[in-house]
Amino acid sequence: MVVDGIADETGETVDRLFHALADATRRDILRRCVRGELSVSRLAAAYPMSFAAVQKHVTVLERAGLVTKERRGREQLVRTDPDAVGRARQALDELESAWRARVDRMSGLLAEDTDATGESGATAPDENTTKGPDR
Amino acid sequence: MVVDGIADETGETVDRLFHALADATRRDILRRCVRGELSVSRLAAAYPMSFAAVQKHVTVLERAGLVTKERRGREQLVRTDPDAVGRARQALDELESAWRARVDRMSGLLAEDTDATGESGATAPDENTTKGPDR
DNA sequence: CTAACGTACAACCAAATGGTTGTAGATGGG
DNA sequence: CCCATCTACAACCATTTGGTTGTACGTTAG
Image (cartoon, rainbow over all chains, first blue to last red; front, top):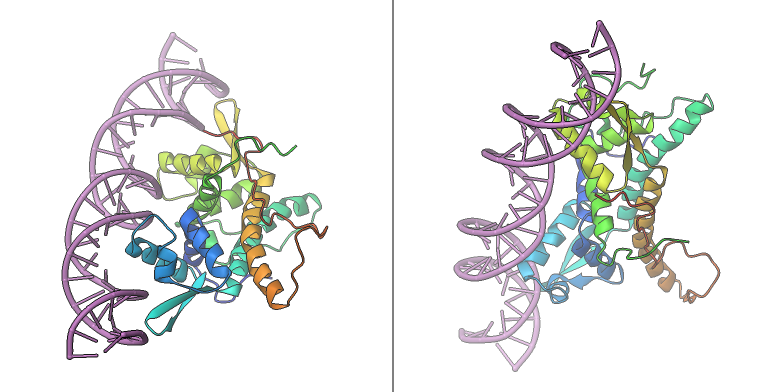
């Protein structure tokens, strides 16, 4: 259950994921691409901004692992990565598990967190990462 | 009733939600608070940054509806909002449903959404302010 | 009352964002 | 071949972020 996989120790993967999702234009691009791959210029035509701006948005989505680009002729087709949403969901699960953890403690059940998928580090919270009796 | 009201026509609520989640420190704050309410100064002591900086992070989380503050004496206790993660999940559901939709079409299944399959969220992203402590 | 604590908020700063234009490299059509 | 597309990327600009310090205010402990 520990989310691992490539597990990122700093949480920067999660940062990029949520950051990419935190923009209405990018979410819209995702919705369009999910319906079928589109070239960047085709996408750009759909928004009131320059081609370059849309190109940047696509790059952000790409770096977040939400889409992949595939070249076909002189066009670059953008398509969503099916596993992407799963990863976002997984990140949320990590948080949600904390919510559940609280309930679990009430039930006297503990040990499950370990999710430390890395993130616990935050920017560098001194010690504590330890889950024990917080005191 | 689902207090829609003005709802968010621009998706700025979702913007704030994901933006708030896109920072490791803020996610860490969430994890700490979920274990039990903490005063802002107590939280601040856990990070290598100033009290004011942590205060700002809490404000971001608050405006995203992820936490609420409650004053007790001279302290301000921060606690997570149980419905918050659900709202984030709902936003993801909206995206995920699109992914599924594509698969469905591939399966030649065109079920109209009139089915009672209980389409969660699908096209109804209403993460309005259930309580909106806005600002 | 006074001191210490916890908070709130303003002013300021460096860096990142989101956007613009402009230029240049591939690729495909006539 | 030449030209129109589509893409990539650099340079630049305005605004937002994330962080700092400093000050002011309410509350609780002595």
